[in-house]
Amino acid sequence: MALLPILRYPDPRLHKKAAPVETVDENIRKLVADMAETMYEAPGIGLAATQVDVHKRVIVIDVSEDKSKLLAFVNPEILECAGEQVCEEGCLSVPGIYEKVTRSERIRVRALDLQGQAFTLEAEGLLAVCIQHEIDHLDGKVFVEHLSKLKQGRIKARLAKQARITA
Ligand code: GNR
Ligand code: NI
Image 1 (spheres, protein in one colour):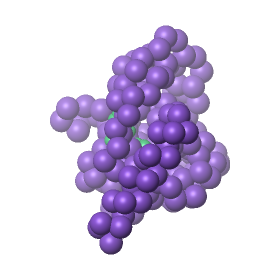
Image 2: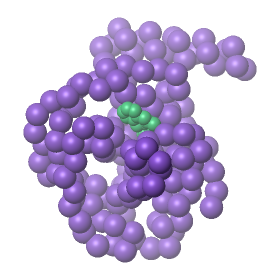
Image 3: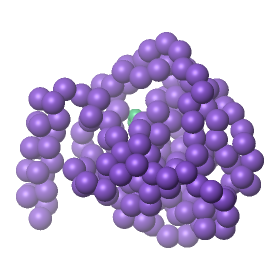
Image 4: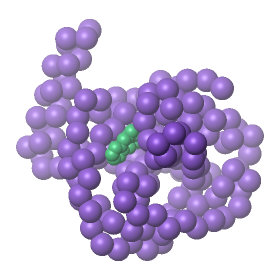
């Protein structure tokens, strides 16, 4: 296993669209293991391959209290969504920034598991938020892009200032 470096917004590579995985093989299973280690170490509740500069449609999530329920999704697709919820979101690629985002309350997702088998999952609440947040990453979208241009500008300025301080 290995820890992978996480891209920071506004890195242009966060806006690449990830390609579907053709075969779930050892390389994909190794990627998932490394992404899980990276997510737990961060710590975070989700990670998309895009954030570690791998532009394949792979995400890992664990919203459990005790980090015991790792979920891996290959080629995830939202089949149905219903309702709305507002959640204060953060992102490992946008450290220190937390903003409210409106998303679907309930979703049905289809994906491949680590054996390449299709499965569907119904999710609500934080898990549903996290799946939508991660699929956005695969489409090159960072959560701040759900906010107004004014807020996006302020966030970029804050991150630039932070980068100057830590440099
Ligand atoms: O760790 C994370 N927490 C979080 C909180 C609210 C909504 C979404 C998230 S996902 C984030 C990890 C991350 O950046 N995934 O892409
Ligand atoms: Ni994120």
